[in-house]
Image (cartoon, rainbow, N blue to C red; front, top):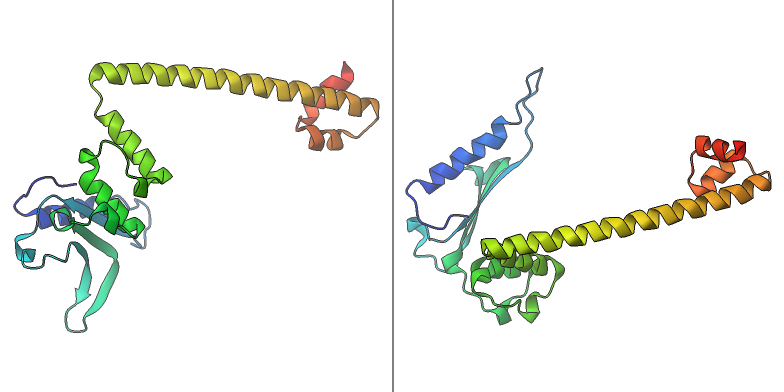
Length: 202
């Protein structure tokens, strides 16, 4: 996300795209096949060359053959969103794409999540954004409460696992008394063959 206008921003985004390309290079024999690379710029400014196109805020750029007007290489894509041009209100949002752009532009202004954005993905984004606004003291309290919750959940999960194991052992003992095969007992209980053998020996 680019919050302020910079000279040569397009040059910089092309430069950034070279890193994930170079990282794909293999040291041994390599046929130079590359995975697709996408560079996405969420801009808080408008390119000078695009000021006279107020309705166009998304740009999808690929390498193109000019004469044929045809994509020459489709594994390198630059996507730019000029956010100052995006002015849809909450009532105008129709697609998931619209909603994402609205959230990206207005998240810092929202005190609560609008009803139209009550979806799990946007609720998660809003939650993360709220945490990001915490003071250091609030963040420490949040981390402490999160640690307590995780410790409590881990204890409950451990107790449940132990209860399941005890139940499986009791089932295995009954099946051993009924002379069921070890393979069958293992399938029914999830216990390993070694564990069942130890139960039989005791």
